Every structure is written in structure tokens, then in C-alpha cells.
Length: 327
Image (cartoon, rainbow, N blue to C red; front, side, top):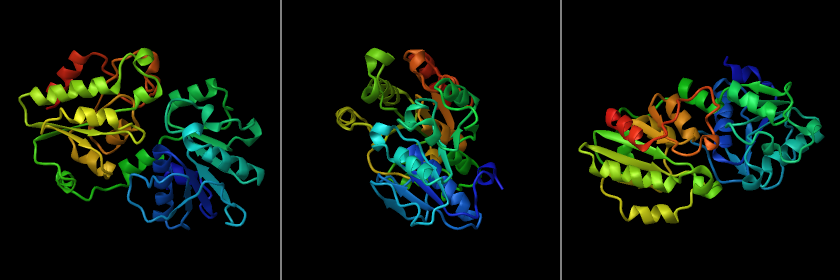
């Protein structure tokens, strides 16, 4: 049995609560592990419509208010930790109610930023019994933000564990790309931008995702190779500016607007490029090469203290050299 299942009361009824995509992926992956191991199916709740990146048979109940844990006979609650603003404090409210009922709670932090912020105004006695973080770098940051050392546990990412050790592709080679209408090329580069302009902007960070998109479009449009750039937007990414850029897109650049099976997409492409997105880590989990590019101020690189990812390239000329070697 893997480490994750060893931490859970598998003979009990477990509820999962999540809001954003990263939290959904972690929760659904854990629920799938429980199901595969033959234990009682967990119940899943979200206040969003996101269904997770892996195929599953769970019914995800969409709710805005905290479920009635007692009437559901729930013994334990596992939550994601979305930003309280974007999630409307959904997970925070689920944690608070569970603690009021003296039910054990585990929460997972999926990145290397905003550790204490994710728990809103919860007093220390209402914090989860265990707070899972990805690595030692994340644990140090969590403790520096005031989370109690006895509660913070290095777990790794359940979703990436699932991708690496359990998930199997249903396709061979690049077959999946044919199912989403992408033609036949020898090399596929996937760019997964973070919404830097939405959160901070060029003045603070030093660059925008739109500038990098334009650079990559220019590169693949002129390079003398049979290569195509696929752009996979972040779920929170505003569309208008990308739609404007799409007017300049050639046949060698594809902007994905429809929902896709992300693990299959990551497995099918030859290279994934990004700033600090979890998509980079997901790609590594399925065995696809990644290039991390961050041409801005180092203090805004959210992965610069992570212990499990590749260093970032900071200069465009160096990125072009790396791309040339890859294609």
C-alpha cells in the first residue's frame, strides 16, 4: 500500500472537498486510489464545475454550502486548499465545520506559495489535523508563514503520484492528438502559461505570458523544422488577449480552447514549456521532457525554492538554444 493510503482511515467514510483544479486533481487521485484498493467509495464535493484531469467514476456533488457531515455519516474530511478569494472560502468553511464536529481533517497544499493564506481566518485550534505539503522546500516556507510544525507533513503530490505509478495512457505514440483534431507533425511543443497578468503584471514580475506567447509563436513560425506549438491555457486565463494573438497564428500554432484530457495531452507531446505551473510537474510524472522558462524577477518565481523541479532558463536566447536541441 502506498504512503498516501497509509495515512487515511480506509475503513471509515471519507469526504473530499475541493474548489480549484489542482485541489480537484489531488482529491480525485486519492479517491481513485481508495477505490482501486477496494475500500468504500469516498464522497466528493466541490463548489465549482471542474471534474478533474483523470477519468473517474465518482459523482462530484456541486454545493455552495458546507455539507452536513453528521447526516452523511462522514468520519473524516480531506480538502484541497484553494485561494480563499477564488474559492469563496469553500474549503475553509468545510474545515471549520468538521473541526466543530470533532472530525479529523487532512488538507493538501499543492504549490509553494500562500501557505497560511489558504486557511483564511481559521484560529490555530481549527486548522486541519495534518497539512500535507510537496517537499522540504514547501515545509520550510509553511513553517516560516506560521503553520504549526507538528501539523505540516511532507507528502508529495497525490495526483502526480497517481500519474506516475497508476495512470496508464489509452493511446500509443501521438494518437491522442488525432482525437482533438491536431494534424501530423514530427514534434509537438506544449506551452502552459500561468496567468501572470491577472495576478501581478509586468511591472512587478518583469514580463507577461503574452510576451512569451508572441516569442514562441515567432520561433515556431520561422524555424525550419516540422514542429507545432500547442498553447494550453490556464483555467483562470482571460481569453480576449489570446484571441487577439490567435489572429496571427499560423498553421504551426494551435490554441486549445476546448477541454482536453490533460494527462493524455502531456504524454503525447514531445516537450512542455512553462513558468511555474503544476502542468510542468504533471508532465514530469508522465515522463515528458519539460523546459522551465522564467525571464522575470527571481523573487516572483514560485518554484525557486522547490526541491523537485528543474532550474529555470531566464534568457530568451538560452530558451531558443534549448528548443533547438529539443526539436
